[in-house]
Amino acid sequence: MELDVDIEKQHGKFRFSAAFSLSLQRCGVFGPSGSGKSTLMHLLSGLLVPDRGKICLAGKTLYDAGAGVNIPPEQRRIGVVFQHAHLFPHMNVRRNLFYGWRRTENSERRIAPESLIKVLNLDHLLDRGVNRLSGGERQRVALGRTVLACPRLILMDEPLTGLDEELKYQIIPYLKKALDEFNIPLLFISHSLREMRLMTDEVLVFRDGTLQAQMTTENLARSGMATTGGGYANMFKLGPPRQVGDLWSYPFGENSLVLTEEDGNGDRLFELDARDIVLFKGRPEATSARNLLSCKVVDIFRFNNRVGVELDCRGMRLVAQIVPESVLELGIEKGVEVVAVIKASSFRRVV
Amino acid sequence: MDTFFNLTTQDTHAIWLSIKVACGATLVATPLGFAAAYLLVFSKLPAKSLIEGLINLPLVLPPVVVGYLLLLLFGQSGFFGSLLQSADIRIIFTLSGAVLASVVVGFPLMVRAIRIGMEGIDHNCLMAARTLGAGWWDTLMTITLPLSGRAILAGMTLMFARSLGEFGATIILAGNIPGVTQTIPLAIYEYTNTPGGDRMALNLCLVSIILSFAILMLSEAVARSMKRS
Image 1 (cartoon, each protein chain N blue to C red):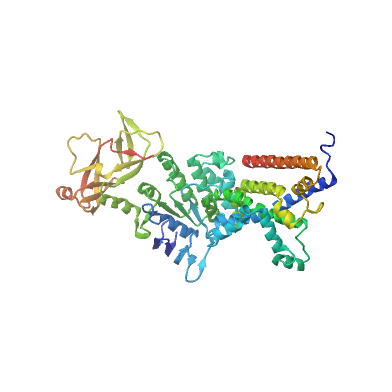
Image 2: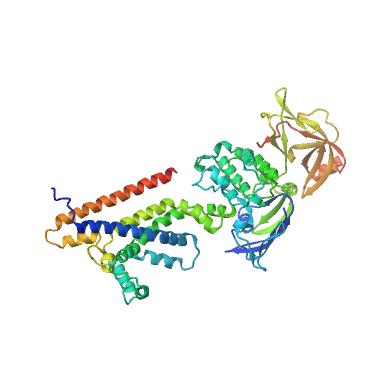
């Protein structure tokens, strides 16, 4: 996407201002509630008019206070997926899905409805009334409805917040698949770091209505180390496992990881806290931990009295969190070989 | 008992007039009521409470007062009266007068009913429609109007029923002219003022009850079918 924004809006006592430009395909807006995330979404989609400034998307000016340009929401072709699905209650699933499609010019229709319906797994629901759908189904219909309008950008305002954990991570693959398949840029709004990491590559961090920072999602995740109680979680997909004794072995790059968790056949998403990785110089003689991985240090970054060590384990990346003293004692620097030791029970399954 | 349900020609005229007035008033008031309710629910006008007060005024004023004010406005020397006269339209002492009186008196009830339904519409649905490419008019016709359907029906029922019973404003603005403006309530009023007219009055009361009941049943049936679809 090519999104250039420089806007201000006074909304009662709340003051919103932001100036940024985004170029990656999947970006996020991150911040606590009340930080202006939803205001930004409304301003971009045209549902709220800025006091001054400029909004340009892919070379087209959507709003320019100086030139008196303000394209109404129905002509902006910016899709919005709201926190709650907000399906039209008097229409069935099919009519909801095609509401935007019918209002899209033939030349703009670059999405095949059949394949989208298949991707979102909605075939069997088409003739159902929307009041008889589960939360996850509703959100999938809302997503399909927005994608079928063939937008030039999709804004998602905490689309997963109302869903339970299980459902949330079931929907994410659908989301990604739909956006990838039809090549639609995404601006994903959330206060959940985990969702952000799963959905985006770059983030805008908002606080109290102002843009605080623009960084890669990975750096946002790493900065979590600086906060009290926070940390960094390694996230990776593993699967399918092979049983080894009463544990499970998952392929991990050229290595394999031994976990206490077993789960079916498909790829599963696991989290590993950076603090649960212990680094050794040379292989320890004996340890209760089941995973010993030889790695090379690729990068070192420091937040206060915590140090993140990025490791290359034969093609797979891991980040371990240690303290500066350990860095000195182990002589850790870029290029040094270390052994990462991880307990089989340290992995947490997300999906 | 054979004379019990003997309606005179004047009575059948009154019944037909009542139905005409109620239908006319409902038809005229529905689009206006929808517009007024829309304005009150969705607009950000600064004078909103003033408009609301004006619309609700006939609900608290005695219908006779409403009728008298209408007579002043639409009479030959009134503001609208003289305006309409130049177009050769007369309101007072005509069927149009009876319809106008019913519209004004029943309007607050209708707006109130539609408004309650409209307030239940999720604003985010309207915003979603806009972002999906539907303009203001499109959104109004495909989202707001269908979602207000049941409320509009309720408002129409109230309007129709209120028009059937309208008396005070009608007698002042349209008079009590048999065959022209004499609706059922006015005919009943005349019978009660005539010695020996009790039975005739009762006949019309019965007709009135049957009509109102039929309307309520019809409205319920339509509402049920709307809910199903």
